[in-house]
Length: 219
Length: 215
Image 1 (cartoon, rainbow over the protein chains, first blue to last red):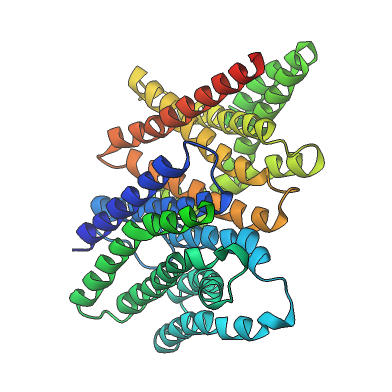
Image 2: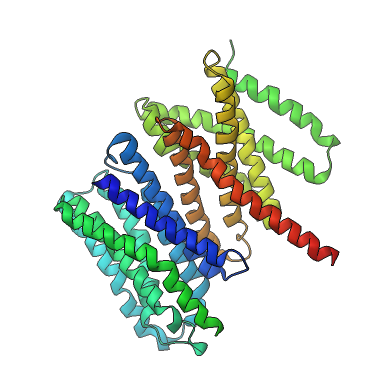
């Protein structure tokens, strides 16, 4: 079952990535948008590796595997786009946004709490430590997604236009953590199937939702 | 017999190094980076030997999980040094990155050839030429693109380069995984399928910019 679910994720991420390349790489588009498309591409490569592992070896194996870097890279691109490009535009560092910054810490707190739950139950070992590293990258990206979801809008509705994208990114982060949780506790297969299907949906709609928001920047 | 890896390294690099004074500036720079790539391969062959021992000579695990990480990091270092110390011009970095990747693949192919001299065929040469040469080139170019932000946008550089490095590692590991499986034909196609759109995009951009200069 994992092979087919992983294959479905690869295909959905591939469609999202392909659509992003087609829509945004013909002309000069914002680096912010390009990085998000790279994020979907990185997720696709990671899932492709996992799919091939299932196909060739029948299992992923315990501990670190290169497919994990797909998630790491994907969230690093998302983090990089927000931290390196967008955040300085929407947050000038003034005390007016202090409350927003504090509330936004809730997202990484939840993400880290999920990993802590796994670490407490399973102990620190060759499986939970790589998952912890993965969690760090998901957590730092989720901070900015929540922040940009709730922050007071700057002029021209720049951040308001991409709020739905940030919501989907936040859901994606949560789904990745749920996947980790379900696999760690060997929960029923239906749970993992639901999480995978939801991830498929998010990866499919990620770029179109972003595109709809970005269009509002220019109209 | 002395170590064949070192013999191959000397035989290739000495002839390339002797040509350097006769070359023009641009060609010389690319050739120097090719030599750097060859040296990176020599260095990593020693590192990989140590890692292989550490993982109980499990060649499959090491080549699909460990060596893509070490190789991509080592190939990135000269590009990063060049970008920080000399120039972070994107075109120059991408050309240099490809040269590092190709240089790396060159020695790697020679080393594998010397280790399996009785089993190699023309098909093997095609696989290695089209496959590993392109994989190393493409992966290093991916990282080189991120490194080009080293001075322009620090925030983007730190995270973006690591993200691109992750992508390059996965791409490399995927290739290694496929070529060692029964789906090795797909493994050979992977770099070619990636290279063609990049080539078309680059040629298209070049012709666009040359048209703009003419006008």
